[in-house]
Length: 103
Image (cartoon, rainbow, N blue to C red; front, side, top):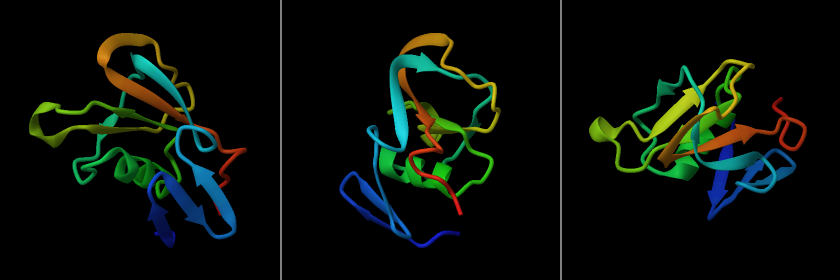
């Protein structure tokens, strides 16, 4: 697991600074990808983003606040993941590896 320090919406990974929704992820509101795996330990969007950054297979997350059973965060690992399914309560966040590369 990477050593992460979260301050508000900023995450520090070694010497790279990623600001959520600006540098590390692109946001697509009201859409989600297919084939996500629930990450029930993520209780906030920043925890969901951290879960993705700590998973070498993660390429995107879907955030569905208030979903039953604590399934707010969905980790997507398929490189073919695109936000194709419209659903008003979910926001898709595509990881931009060129902006926040992993070690």
